[in-house]
Amino acid sequence: MSRINLDITKDHCPMTFVKTKLQLERMDEGDILEILLTAGEPLENVPRTVTEQGFQVLETLQVKGDIYKVVIKK
Amino acid sequence: MSGDFDKAIAVFTLASGAAAVNYEVNLFFTFWGLNNIKKNKGRGFIGKGVLARFFNFLLGGRNNLPLSRLNFAGASPGLMTNLMKSRNVATLPELFQASIALGVNFYACEMAMHVLGLTRDDLIPEVKDVLGVATFLELSKGGQTLFI
Image (tube, rainbow over all chains, first blue to last red; front, side, top):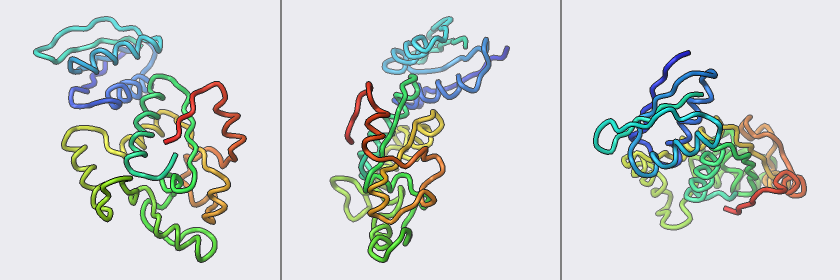
């Protein structure tokens, strides 16, 4: 089981969830993905879309200001 | 889909976004839309027949897509790409590559290819098939169809 980091704080729709999806596809079952993203559209949509696809959002924490970390298990 | 730069951005944004959330996406490229999926990204005298070769040269490939408005003799797509880069928004080539990586299906219109004298070999290998309208409608049955 490995932990992978993905920083999408500089990205916008649709690349926020496109990059998330491409990264998740490359990972193995049980791997953990830690995503750094910004508040607003990415924070609302990325956790929602990964949950819809059957991945598990373990936690969402505020890193600082409007930067958040979302931890996802494949 | 058709062959304008701004419309191509709309198509590949929707396509990659939808594919990223597990929609099955089928794109049907017809007439000027074929410019998006030509193997040759720039201008080239490709195809069969003098007139068709001339048309294909003028149309060019996906590096030559014009803006549907405010094209300014082809200067605008480059300016727009720079603007998008400076704003950290995915550019057309990035959206195009993302669509391919996420398994968006590309289909080429058989009739438009015939008119423009193009063969399967003139198109990128990612094109899944060359189809007629009836087959494409069959494929997209039960889904939503957008004309962009």
